[in-house]
Structures are given as structure tokens and as C-alpha cells.
Image (cartoon, rainbow, N blue to C red):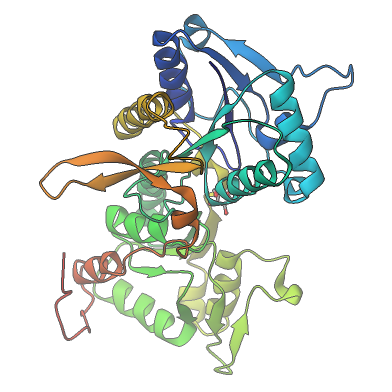
Length: 383
Ligand code: F6P
């Protein structure tokens, strides 16, 4: 049997570890494994010589020393053209030319929608017989429904934590206020968890309205009760700011603010309400792609290896009579203290809304901020 592997969308630390596990366990079954470079882009577009050299056969030795490397050696791409049916037909024809009928797609939500569409196109045009697709969740955002973790989220959290620890050193030395913008789209998993791991004074999630007056008061209060620094974490997906002067709600996704990052917008609004003494202390910073790079953590290496082996097991045990649709692997609780990898129909996962992080992490953080009164009357239901 011949299988293809590709990584798609934003890279995530641990993708290489998953590829390694797939190649090595596929080799145990004596299958031929092809790496498809540049994700869906590489799957569809030939290079200038006209040959399909985005496809490279991978042998067990080709994946030595990739386990601990961040990024993806298969490269990745964002490829909006995949939304066109004709492009997907080309993808299927390219797979057909190489007699590849199994695809392992490592990526996030957008990539999985592409996978489902590819399956549908094959159904409509019958290009490949018994086409099998297995999706492996890998995104630092941890926003994929039905799985507790996606590959890369743990490493990104650790990376951001280390960065914020460093920011705190300098913030402390000058009694400054840092507005740290973190990635994570509008899921808020990264902002909330990094709020806890860095002792953030405030976390502004993407679904919150940043009330500038309340934030200003809280900064003044924090510094007045003896805090040496203030870290405010801002989700990159933050949309709304309540102006401290006019009380107007600003939609910062609006075209007229497009040249400003979320953290810069919050800074601009804050300095218009704070006195000279405080406004000079405000510093915005965007962690950006630093969070996406770096060597995968222990957790991500193990998770990626489990997902990789499970992908081949799923393809091996696939019953073409029963299962025709793409599946997604997920890490779920087994009801005891352990977790297990399960295989779910991809369409069922895609039918659910993308995840929003549990707000209990937000409350948890508020409870443990030094010197700030916790104003929530109730304990969170679950901790
Ligand atoms: O989905 C992963 C992610 O890093 C998001 O957190 C972020 O919004 C986005 O990708 C950035 O994408 P790009 O690297 O294409 O700018």
C-alpha cells in the first residue's frame, strides 16, 4: 500500500515527531510512504519542470533526528485555492498518478475542512477507489473540538511562559506594565493558560470587552499595593475595547484600526486615561511567531508519537465496506485517570463549533492574583 503524508496550515512543534512515527510504523507494515511537501499546495501544484517532485518517498532513515525539531521538515502552506473544486480534482489526479490512496493530514481546522472537501470531490468524480483520509490534530491554538490536546499547544504554552518570565524580569526592574499579545486565534486557550503560568494581572480574551477605565484602575491599584510589575495578557483575537474617555465601544477589527495590533490599541487607549506617572510605564509587545517555533516539549513528542502510530493503525484496520469517510484522531479521557486515542468521523468534528477555552482558567487566574480583590462572588463550579 502507498500512503501520503502532508502538514498543512500553521506549523506546530511536534509535527516532525508525528511524521517520524508515521513513517516508521508504516515501514513496519512494509508500506511505501510519500512525504508531500508544502501541504495542499504541494499536493496540487507541479514544479516548473512539470514533474511531481513535491512528492518524495520517505524511508525510516529519512526521519532520523527530526523528533526534537520544531516546525515541519515537510514544509507547510496556507492555500486558499484548495477551496476550488478544480484544484481538488488536480490533487486527486496527482494522487492517482502515484497510486496513493491513503492520506494522513497533519494540521488544524482549516486543513481538516480541506480534507473533508477533498473526500467529497472524490465521491463526486470517483477518481480514487477506496480513498482513506486520517487527520491528526496539530495546532498551537488547541481549538479543535473533541480532542483534549492538539500537537504543539503544550510547547507553545511553555515557550510563551519562558518569554513572559523574561519580560517580568525587566518589568520588575522598572516597575512597568507590559501588554503581552499572544497567539491563539479566538480560542483563548493560550491566553488563559499563559495567564496562570505567568501570574498575569489581567487576561483579555478575544470574547471580552477591554474596559479601559477598569483596567487603568486595576493597574493603579496593583502598583499601589506594592506590585513591582504588571503583566496583562491580550489575546490576538481581541475585538472590542471600551474607551476610557468616551465609553464608546471600539471594534478594533475595523478597517480604520488595521495598522494597529490589539496590544497597541489597548496601550493607546490606556495612555489617554492614565496620569503621566503611570502612562510612561506602559509597554506593548507581540510574542507572535516566537510561540510557534522551538523544539517540542516532552508532552508534544509523546502525543505526536501516539497520534502517528495511531494513524497507521487506523489505516491498517480500515474496513472499506464500513468506513468510507475521513476520520480524525483525538485524545480523550477513558473515564478513569488515563486518556486514549480514538478515531472519530471527521464530519462530526467539523459540525461542532471551534473550541473556546474554558473560562474556569480565567477565574482561576483571578483568584490567585496578589493584591487584587477577587470580585466574583462564587467559586468556579469545577477547578
Ligand atoms: O493557527 C496557528 C496560528 O499561529 C494562530 O495562532 C495565528 O493566528 C495564525 O496561525 C497566524 O498565521 P500566519 O502564520 O499564517 O500569519
